[in-house]
Length: 368
Image (cartoon, rainbow, N blue to C red):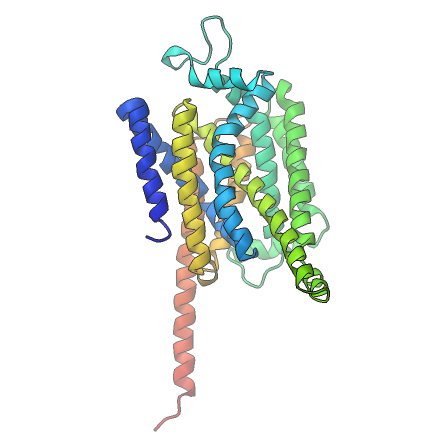
Protein backbone atom coordinates (compact mmCIF):
# COMPACT_ATOMS: atom_id res chain seq x y z
CA UNK A 1 0.00 0.00 0.00
CA UNK A 2 2.92 2.38 0.61
CA UNK A 3 3.89 2.01 -3.05
CA UNK A 4 0.45 1.79 -4.69
CA UNK A 5 -1.54 3.83 -2.17
CA UNK A 6 -1.01 7.17 -3.91
CA UNK A 7 -1.98 5.66 -7.28
CA UNK A 8 -5.19 4.27 -5.80
CA UNK A 9 -6.07 7.66 -4.26
CA UNK A 10 -5.34 9.46 -7.57
CA UNK A 11 -7.47 6.90 -9.41
CA UNK A 12 -10.44 7.44 -7.09
CA UNK A 13 -10.15 11.24 -7.38
CA UNK A 14 -9.81 11.04 -11.18
CA UNK A 15 -12.89 8.86 -11.49
CA UNK A 16 -14.87 11.25 -9.29
CA UNK A 17 -13.73 14.23 -11.38
CA UNK A 18 -14.67 12.35 -14.57
CA UNK A 19 -18.11 11.60 -13.18
CA UNK A 20 -18.66 15.25 -12.18
CA UNK A 21 -17.35 16.39 -15.56
CA UNK A 22 -19.37 14.09 -17.82
CA UNK A 23 -21.52 11.72 -15.80
CA UNK A 24 -21.49 7.89 -15.95
CA UNK A 25 -20.26 7.84 -19.56
CA UNK A 26 -17.19 9.92 -18.74
CA UNK A 27 -16.57 7.75 -15.66
CA UNK A 28 -16.61 4.57 -17.76
CA UNK A 29 -14.39 6.06 -20.47
CA UNK A 30 -11.88 7.28 -17.88
CA UNK A 31 -11.69 3.82 -16.31
CA UNK A 32 -11.24 2.14 -19.70
CA UNK A 33 -8.44 4.53 -20.66
CA UNK A 34 -6.67 3.95 -17.35
CA UNK A 35 -6.75 0.17 -17.87
CA UNK A 36 -5.62 0.61 -21.48
CA UNK A 37 -2.62 2.73 -20.46
CA UNK A 38 -1.48 0.33 -17.72
CA UNK A 39 -1.73 -2.68 -20.02
CA UNK A 40 0.17 -0.88 -22.79
CA UNK A 41 2.84 0.51 -20.46
CA UNK A 42 3.82 -2.42 -18.24
CA UNK A 43 6.90 -3.02 -20.39
CA UNK A 44 7.62 0.70 -20.03
CA UNK A 45 7.70 0.28 -16.24
CA UNK A 46 10.15 -2.62 -16.50
CA UNK A 47 12.51 -0.62 -18.72
CA UNK A 48 12.16 2.44 -16.48
CA UNK A 49 13.20 0.27 -13.52
CA UNK A 50 16.32 -1.02 -15.31
CA UNK A 51 17.44 2.56 -16.01
CA UNK A 52 16.48 3.90 -12.57
CA UNK A 53 18.74 1.30 -10.95
CA UNK A 54 21.68 3.08 -12.62
CA UNK A 55 20.70 6.48 -11.23
CA UNK A 56 21.45 8.03 -7.87
CA UNK A 57 18.68 8.35 -5.30
CA UNK A 58 18.42 12.07 -6.10
CA UNK A 59 17.76 11.51 -9.81
CA UNK A 60 15.39 8.67 -9.05
CA UNK A 61 13.30 11.11 -7.00
CA UNK A 62 13.51 13.71 -9.77
CA UNK A 63 12.18 11.26 -12.35
CA UNK A 64 9.48 9.90 -10.06
CA UNK A 65 8.22 13.43 -9.32
CA UNK A 66 9.04 15.93 -12.07
CA UNK A 67 9.26 13.17 -14.65
CA UNK A 68 5.78 11.94 -13.80
CA UNK A 69 4.40 15.50 -14.03
CA UNK A 70 5.92 15.78 -17.51
CA UNK A 71 4.43 12.40 -18.41
CA UNK A 72 0.97 13.36 -17.15
CA UNK A 73 0.64 16.90 -18.49
CA UNK A 74 3.30 16.95 -21.18
CA UNK A 75 2.78 13.71 -23.07
CA UNK A 76 -0.90 13.03 -22.38
CA UNK A 77 -2.29 16.57 -22.65
CA UNK A 78 0.12 19.14 -24.11
CA UNK A 79 1.81 16.83 -26.63
CA UNK A 80 -1.36 15.99 -28.63
CA UNK A 81 -2.30 19.67 -28.65
CA UNK A 82 1.21 20.60 -29.79
CA UNK A 83 1.04 18.10 -32.66
CA UNK A 84 -2.24 19.60 -33.84
CA UNK A 85 -1.17 23.24 -33.68
CA UNK A 86 2.22 22.53 -35.30
CA UNK A 87 1.12 20.18 -38.11
CA UNK A 88 -2.09 22.08 -38.88
CA UNK A 89 -0.60 25.54 -38.51
CA UNK A 90 -3.06 26.50 -35.78
CA UNK A 91 -2.56 28.64 -32.71
CA UNK A 92 -2.47 26.81 -29.35
CA UNK A 93 -5.79 28.50 -28.40
CA UNK A 94 -7.45 27.30 -31.62
CA UNK A 95 -6.12 23.77 -31.13
CA UNK A 96 -7.48 23.69 -27.58
CA UNK A 97 -10.81 25.06 -28.78
CA UNK A 98 -11.02 22.28 -31.39
CA UNK A 99 -10.22 19.69 -28.72
CA UNK A 100 -12.92 20.95 -26.38
CA UNK A 101 -15.58 21.37 -29.07
CA UNK A 102 -15.62 18.30 -31.34
CA UNK A 103 -18.16 17.87 -34.16
CA UNK A 104 -21.49 16.30 -33.17
CA UNK A 105 -22.11 12.55 -33.42
CA UNK A 106 -18.41 11.73 -33.46
CA UNK A 107 -17.84 13.10 -36.98
CA UNK A 108 -14.28 13.77 -38.15
CA UNK A 109 -15.18 17.04 -39.87
CA UNK A 110 -17.42 20.00 -39.16
CA UNK A 111 -20.32 21.15 -41.33
CA UNK A 112 -17.95 23.38 -43.35
CA UNK A 113 -15.66 20.35 -44.00
CA UNK A 114 -12.94 21.71 -41.71
CA UNK A 115 -11.10 18.89 -39.88
CA UNK A 116 -11.73 18.07 -36.24
CA UNK A 117 -9.05 17.80 -33.55
CA UNK A 118 -9.27 14.00 -33.74
CA UNK A 119 -8.77 13.99 -37.51
CA UNK A 120 -5.82 16.36 -37.34
CA UNK A 121 -4.12 14.18 -34.74
CA UNK A 122 -4.91 11.02 -36.72
CA UNK A 123 -3.45 12.61 -39.86
CA UNK A 124 -0.21 13.21 -37.92
CA UNK A 125 -0.06 9.53 -36.90
CA UNK A 126 2.40 8.41 -39.64
CA UNK A 127 5.13 10.78 -38.50
CA UNK A 128 4.44 10.05 -34.81
CA UNK A 129 4.54 6.29 -35.40
CA UNK A 130 7.72 6.57 -37.47
CA UNK A 131 9.56 8.52 -34.76
CA UNK A 132 8.35 6.32 -31.90
CA UNK A 133 8.83 3.09 -33.83
CA UNK A 134 12.39 4.01 -34.84
CA UNK A 135 13.35 5.06 -31.31
CA UNK A 136 11.95 1.89 -29.71
CA UNK A 137 13.44 -0.32 -32.42
CA UNK A 138 16.88 1.13 -31.66
CA UNK A 139 16.33 0.40 -27.97
CA UNK A 140 15.34 -3.20 -28.71
CA UNK A 141 18.17 -3.85 -31.17
CA UNK A 142 20.87 -2.38 -28.94
CA UNK A 143 19.75 -4.74 -26.18
CA UNK A 144 19.28 -7.87 -28.25
CA UNK A 145 22.46 -7.47 -30.34
CA UNK A 146 24.68 -7.28 -27.24
CA UNK A 147 26.28 -10.40 -25.78
CA UNK A 148 24.91 -11.23 -22.33
CA UNK A 149 25.77 -13.80 -19.72
CA UNK A 150 22.08 -14.62 -19.20
CA UNK A 151 19.83 -15.15 -22.22
CA UNK A 152 16.12 -15.87 -22.36
CA UNK A 153 15.29 -17.06 -25.89
CA UNK A 154 18.81 -18.45 -26.21
CA UNK A 155 18.23 -20.14 -29.58
CA UNK A 156 17.59 -16.68 -31.03
CA UNK A 157 19.38 -14.23 -28.74
CA UNK A 158 22.81 -15.88 -28.97
CA UNK A 159 23.00 -15.83 -32.79
CA UNK A 160 21.74 -12.24 -32.79
CA UNK A 161 24.40 -11.28 -30.24
CA UNK A 162 27.07 -12.69 -32.57
CA UNK A 163 25.69 -10.59 -35.42
CA UNK A 164 25.79 -7.62 -33.08
CA UNK A 165 29.59 -7.59 -33.28
CA UNK A 166 29.15 -5.76 -36.58
CA UNK A 167 29.50 -2.04 -35.87
CA UNK A 168 26.36 0.09 -36.18
CA UNK A 169 24.19 -2.91 -37.09
CA UNK A 170 21.31 -1.57 -34.96
CA UNK A 171 21.37 1.73 -36.86
CA UNK A 172 21.49 -0.04 -40.24
CA UNK A 173 18.57 -2.34 -39.40
CA UNK A 174 16.52 0.56 -38.02
CA UNK A 175 17.10 2.66 -41.14
CA UNK A 176 16.14 -0.29 -43.36
CA UNK A 177 12.93 -0.72 -41.33
CA UNK A 178 12.13 2.99 -41.75
CA UNK A 179 12.66 2.84 -45.52
CA UNK A 180 10.45 -0.26 -45.78
CA UNK A 181 7.75 1.40 -43.69
CA UNK A 182 7.88 4.50 -45.88
CA UNK A 183 7.80 2.54 -49.14
CA UNK A 184 5.31 -0.17 -48.21
CA UNK A 185 3.04 1.20 -45.49
CA UNK A 186 3.01 4.96 -45.98
CA UNK A 187 0.86 6.78 -48.50
CA UNK A 188 2.70 8.73 -51.19
CA UNK A 189 2.07 12.07 -49.50
CA UNK A 190 3.36 10.78 -46.15
CA UNK A 191 6.63 9.20 -47.34
CA UNK A 192 8.87 12.26 -46.87
CA UNK A 193 7.57 12.95 -43.36
CA UNK A 194 7.80 9.26 -42.39
CA UNK A 195 11.42 9.10 -43.55
CA UNK A 196 12.30 12.35 -41.79
CA UNK A 197 10.54 11.40 -38.53
CA UNK A 198 12.06 7.90 -38.55
CA UNK A 199 15.58 9.21 -39.08
CA UNK A 200 14.99 11.78 -36.35
CA UNK A 201 13.94 8.95 -34.02
CA UNK A 202 17.20 7.09 -34.69
CA UNK A 203 19.27 10.24 -34.23
CA UNK A 204 17.45 11.09 -30.98
CA UNK A 205 18.16 7.65 -29.55
CA UNK A 206 21.84 7.72 -30.56
CA UNK A 207 22.37 11.20 -29.08
CA UNK A 208 20.48 10.70 -25.81
CA UNK A 209 21.77 7.19 -25.17
CA UNK A 210 25.29 8.22 -26.16
CA UNK A 211 25.30 11.18 -23.78
CA UNK A 212 24.02 8.99 -20.96
CA UNK A 213 26.73 6.40 -21.61
CA UNK A 214 29.45 9.04 -21.95
CA UNK A 215 28.78 10.37 -18.46
CA UNK A 216 28.22 6.97 -16.89
CA UNK A 217 31.52 5.21 -17.46
CA UNK A 218 33.62 3.68 -14.74
CA UNK A 219 36.64 5.61 -16.05
CA UNK A 220 34.89 8.95 -15.50
CA UNK A 221 33.79 7.98 -12.00
CA UNK A 222 37.33 6.97 -11.08
CA UNK A 223 38.73 10.16 -12.57
CA UNK A 224 36.19 12.23 -10.63
CA UNK A 225 37.17 10.55 -7.38
CA UNK A 226 40.68 12.02 -7.71
CA UNK A 227 39.26 15.53 -7.94
CA UNK A 228 37.40 15.21 -4.66
CA UNK A 229 33.76 14.79 -3.69
CA UNK A 230 32.60 17.77 -5.76
CA UNK A 231 33.99 16.25 -8.94
CA UNK A 232 32.29 12.95 -8.23
CA UNK A 233 28.96 14.67 -7.61
CA UNK A 234 29.33 16.66 -10.84
CA UNK A 235 30.05 13.55 -12.92
CA UNK A 236 27.20 11.66 -11.32
CA UNK A 237 24.92 14.65 -11.86
CA UNK A 238 25.66 14.68 -15.59
CA UNK A 239 25.02 10.98 -15.80
CA UNK A 240 21.74 11.31 -13.94
CA UNK A 241 20.63 14.28 -16.06
CA UNK A 242 21.16 12.51 -19.37
CA UNK A 243 19.61 9.30 -18.07
CA UNK A 244 16.65 11.45 -17.00
CA UNK A 245 16.38 12.84 -20.54
CA UNK A 246 16.64 9.30 -21.90
CA UNK A 247 13.76 8.15 -19.70
CA UNK A 248 11.61 11.10 -20.74
CA UNK A 249 12.12 10.42 -24.45
CA UNK A 250 11.52 6.73 -23.77
CA UNK A 251 8.25 7.51 -21.99
CA UNK A 252 7.23 9.72 -24.89
CA UNK A 253 7.86 6.90 -27.37
CA UNK A 254 5.80 4.50 -25.27
CA UNK A 255 3.02 7.07 -25.00
CA UNK A 256 2.46 7.45 -28.73
CA UNK A 257 0.35 4.33 -29.17
CA UNK A 258 -1.66 5.04 -26.02
CA UNK A 259 -2.46 8.64 -27.00
CA UNK A 260 -3.42 7.72 -30.54
CA UNK A 261 -5.35 4.66 -29.38
CA UNK A 262 -7.28 6.77 -26.89
CA UNK A 263 -8.99 8.58 -29.74
CA UNK A 264 -10.64 5.32 -30.76
CA UNK A 265 -12.43 5.60 -27.39
CA UNK A 266 -12.91 9.35 -26.90
CA UNK A 267 -11.59 12.63 -28.31
CA UNK A 268 -12.20 14.59 -25.11
CA UNK A 269 -8.76 15.81 -23.91
CA UNK A 270 -9.96 16.10 -20.31
CA UNK A 271 -11.00 12.45 -20.16
CA UNK A 272 -7.79 11.43 -21.93
CA UNK A 273 -5.71 13.40 -19.42
CA UNK A 274 -7.56 11.84 -16.48
CA UNK A 275 -7.47 8.26 -17.80
CA UNK A 276 -4.12 8.08 -19.60
CA UNK A 277 -2.33 10.74 -17.62
CA UNK A 278 -3.34 10.60 -14.00
CA UNK A 279 -4.52 6.99 -13.63
CA UNK A 280 -2.26 5.33 -16.19
CA UNK A 281 0.93 7.29 -15.53
CA UNK A 282 0.60 7.03 -11.75
CA UNK A 283 0.22 3.25 -11.86
CA UNK A 284 3.18 2.96 -14.23
CA UNK A 285 5.15 5.03 -11.69
CA UNK A 286 4.07 2.74 -8.84
CA UNK A 287 4.98 -0.41 -10.78
CA UNK A 288 8.38 1.11 -11.56
CA UNK A 289 8.99 1.93 -7.88
CA UNK A 290 7.89 -1.57 -6.86
CA UNK A 291 10.31 -3.21 -9.31
CA UNK A 292 13.22 -1.07 -8.07
CA UNK A 293 12.59 -1.31 -4.32
CA UNK A 294 11.74 -5.01 -4.25
CA UNK A 295 14.67 -6.02 -6.46
CA UNK A 296 12.24 -7.82 -8.74
CA UNK A 297 14.44 -7.50 -11.82
CA UNK A 298 17.37 -9.23 -10.16
CA UNK A 299 15.11 -11.93 -8.75
CA UNK A 300 13.24 -12.59 -12.00
CA UNK A 301 16.10 -12.26 -14.45
CA UNK A 302 14.13 -12.76 -17.65
CA UNK A 303 11.76 -9.83 -17.04
CA UNK A 304 14.15 -7.37 -18.67
CA UNK A 305 14.45 -9.64 -21.70
CA UNK A 306 10.68 -10.01 -21.96
CA UNK A 307 10.22 -6.25 -21.73
CA UNK A 308 12.69 -5.64 -24.55
CA UNK A 309 11.00 -8.23 -26.76
CA UNK A 310 7.71 -6.45 -26.02
CA UNK A 311 9.39 -3.19 -27.04
CA UNK A 312 10.56 -4.79 -30.29
CA UNK A 313 7.02 -5.95 -31.00
CA UNK A 314 5.64 -2.48 -30.19
CA UNK A 315 8.20 -0.86 -32.50
CA UNK A 316 7.16 -3.09 -35.39
CA UNK A 317 3.47 -2.47 -34.62
CA UNK A 318 4.03 1.30 -34.71
CA UNK A 319 5.80 1.08 -38.08
CA UNK A 320 3.12 -1.21 -39.50
CA UNK A 321 0.39 1.09 -38.16
CA UNK A 322 1.61 3.80 -40.52
CA UNK A 323 -0.45 2.11 -43.23
CA UNK A 324 -2.63 -0.43 -41.40
CA UNK A 325 -4.76 0.06 -38.31
CA UNK A 326 -3.66 -2.21 -35.47
CA UNK A 327 -6.16 -2.86 -32.70
CA UNK A 328 -5.00 -1.36 -29.40
CA UNK A 329 -6.10 -4.49 -27.54
CA UNK A 330 -3.66 -6.56 -29.60
CA UNK A 331 -0.88 -4.05 -28.89
CA UNK A 332 -1.48 -4.25 -25.15
CA UNK A 333 -1.89 -8.03 -25.03
CA UNK A 334 1.32 -8.79 -26.92
CA UNK A 335 3.34 -6.79 -24.37
CA UNK A 336 1.60 -8.52 -21.47
CA UNK A 337 2.20 -11.90 -23.16
CA UNK A 338 5.97 -11.35 -23.47
CA UNK A 339 6.34 -10.12 -19.89
CA UNK A 340 4.07 -12.86 -18.54
CA UNK A 341 6.11 -15.52 -20.34
CA UNK A 342 9.34 -13.98 -19.04
CA UNK A 343 7.98 -13.98 -15.49
CA UNK A 344 6.87 -17.63 -15.67
CA UNK A 345 10.19 -18.80 -17.12
CA UNK A 346 12.01 -16.80 -14.42
CA UNK A 347 10.01 -18.67 -11.77
CA UNK A 348 10.92 -22.00 -13.40
CA UNK A 349 14.60 -21.00 -13.52
CA UNK A 350 14.60 -19.96 -9.86
CA UNK A 351 12.94 -23.22 -8.83
CA UNK A 352 15.48 -25.29 -10.75
CA UNK A 353 18.40 -23.36 -9.25
CA UNK A 354 16.91 -23.79 -5.78
CA UNK A 355 16.57 -27.54 -6.29
CA UNK A 356 20.15 -27.74 -7.60
CA UNK A 357 21.47 -25.86 -4.55
CA UNK A 358 19.57 -28.23 -2.27
CA UNK A 359 21.13 -31.27 -3.97
CA UNK A 360 24.61 -29.76 -3.77
CA UNK A 361 24.14 -29.00 -0.07
CA UNK A 362 23.14 -32.61 0.62
CA UNK A 363 26.17 -33.93 -1.26
CA UNK A 364 28.65 -31.90 0.82
CA UNK A 365 26.94 -32.58 4.17
CA UNK A 366 29.14 -35.00 6.16
CA UNK A 367 27.48 -38.30 7.06
CA UNK A 368 27.20 -39.23 10.79
